Every structure is written in structure tokens, then in C-alpha cells.
Image (cartoon, rainbow over all chains, first blue to last red; front, top):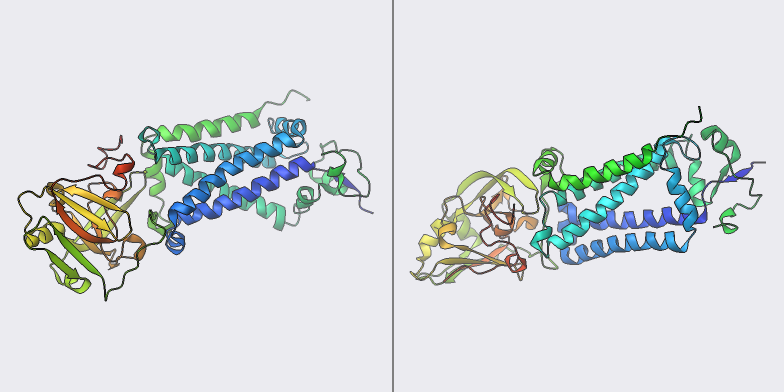
Amino acid sequence: MTRYVRRFTRSERTFHWVNAAFFLYLLATGLVLYLPRLSALFGRRPLIKDLHFWGGIGWVAALAAVALLGDTRGLLRTMRELETLDHRRFNPGQKVNAILNAAITLLFVASGLLLWLGERDTRFRLQNTVTLHDVLMLGALALLAGHLYLAVIHPATRHALRGMTRGTVSEDWARRHHPRWEVPPDPGEGTTTGAART
Amino acid sequence: MEAQPRKLGRGLFLVTVAGGLSSLWWGKSLTRAVSAVPFAPGGGWRIYTVAPTMPKFDPATWKLEIGGLVDKPMTLSYDELRALPRTSQIRNFHCVTGWSVSNVHWTGVRLSDLLDRVSPQFSAQGVLFTSAEIPYTDSLTLEQAKLHDVLLAYEMDGKPLPREHGAPVRLVIPEMYGYKNVKWVSRIDLVKQPQDGYWEQLGYDRDAWVGRSNGL
């Protein structure tokens, strides 16, 4: 019988999936603005610009809402785990991925706001804003590709996906991949452990 | 060996954010480096439009009208336009938002040739371009419009101008930013003075010289 241990709280999982959903929405609308073929296919640039911009505002607002309405202290604790690159619950690669994503998000929001403001007021027009926004997109895509490969395809690591969907991973897997992680006590047979303590 | 681990994660976050934000002030270097990537999608172009749909070009019904303060107003069909003396040039295209496309091969009619044909009146000091993409307009001074490298281009890189680049005809004024290079030109009027076009009403400079306008 496989024993499972809690890997992600409900708040962590909600934060992750809200982030993923908004990222994909912004990627889709952003690519329509960015790729000439798609721009030509869809037209309606002013509308798509608005959808993209307000999606970005929604991204920040939704993440803030999850952080404030969910387990704020737990999320702050998770953030502090990321401050050091040692290997406990997360390995250094996972931490670098999360940290770069956080930095990229912040830069996306800053450069996106500047693009929006720059179209309305010359003082906000800077030479490289569009380029920065593009480079961020390419960087984020590269990270996403690696992330998806490890979480969905690579046989040795894809069990980790269960941690982000159901909240638990097998104890055996946890000990093999994260030997120095002090695994939380066995949550029992029920796998919806997040319900007990969000 | 349980020394306090260094906060490398925090450092990585701060360095990435600081690097990204500072890149906004690196001058053109970042943009130049990125533009140099040979596999940039769409050849490095972005398609900027202001109306819900792009104008559709029908060779059978398309007309270019040239009028206003002229002695000999003119209406050209697509075939008539293409039958006029043609000229080609290879120039870089610069957008005011920072991106550029190098070595674009344009073919079309020199605007000064067309202007000579319609005989502008003495009072005409501006040329107003109206796009089929409503409400896009823009204008040049007559002097700017007569620069030798200002074209009405109907071919780009050896092929008929694609729809998203303004088919069938766009203005090309390489020394000015892209928003002066009106796409889908459907009317040209000689007017007393240039007037603010679409982007100029939103605060962009009317004299949009590359590198010497819009605070760049």
C-alpha cells in the first residue's frame, strides 16, 4: 500500500493554478498582438489590447486575492523557503524556476503598465519597453517548456504533478527525490489533505 | 556543516528584477541585440492596427484618389498605378516603440512623381494621407513628401504588399518612424498645412524623424 505525504497546501495549489491560467490567457492574447500571422488573422487589435491589458491587471489582482484570502502565513513561509537555494522540500532547480517566474511576473507587470501608459503620455515612453516585454515572454516560455517536461513527460519526475493536483505525493518518491525534506506526518488514506488545513 | 545557508534565492530575484528594469535605460542596445536574432517571428515585424478589421483589397474596385488643392486631380486604378514608372529601394524600417526591421526591399512609385502630375496649387503646403483603415490619417509637409526616398510602395521584399502591411499600397518614408508610413492609403489630398494624424492626436510628434523626435 502506497503511503502519501502532503506536498502542497490548497492555497499553494490555488496560487499555482490561478497563476498558470492567467499566464496562458496572457500568452494567447499576447501572441495575437505579437505574431504578424495571428495579428492578421484576428484583426481587432484595439479589443485584443484591452483584453490583454485587463487580463494582466486581473492576474495581479487574482494572485493578491489568493494570497490574502487563503493561507497567507503559509504562503509567506513558502516564500521564505525560496530565499535559500538549498535542497529540502524543493531542489535548487525548482527554486530557481519559481524565483525567475516571480521576477518575470513583476517585470511583465512593470513593462506592461509602461506600454499602456506610454501610449497615453509621452513621459512614460522608453526605448526598450516593448523589447523587454518580448524578452520576458521568451524567457517565460523557455521556463514553461522545461517545467512542463519535468512535470508531465519525464518519467522520473512526473509523479510530482500529483503534488500540484491532489496535494500529495508518495512517501517513497518524496524520500528519493527530496531526501532532506522533513516530510509532514502521514495525512491518512484520504488524499484531499488540503481540506483539513488550507 | 549546518551553517546558515546564504540567501541566494533572494539575490537571484533582486538581480533579475534590477537587470530587467535597468534594461529600459540601456539605450538601443537591448533592442538591437534582439532585432539581430535571425529567427524573429514574422521577420521582426509587428502588425499595428487601430480599427476592428483590416481593409480588404479588391483589385477590381480599388481606387487611389489624389485631390485637394491641385489643378489636375487624379484617380488611379491598381493597374494604372502599377503602370507608372517604378522605383525600388532597400531601407531599414523603424518603429517608435523601439523595434526595427533591417533591409526591407520596397518597390513602388515615387511620391514626388505623382505630386508633379497633379500640379499642386501654390497654397498647398501639406499632404494629407487617408487610410482605408478608418480613422487613420497622417500628413507630411509638401517638402517632406517630395523627398526622393518617399514612395507609395506596392511591393515588399519582391512580392505584392501583404494585407497586414497595407495592401495594396502604403506610404514609405524611411527617415521617419513607422506611424508616418501610412498603410492602406486610399486618398491623398493636398492641403494648406499638415495636420495632426491619428497618433499625433495622441501625443506623438508630427515631424517623426528617426532618432530625432518623440524624445528618442
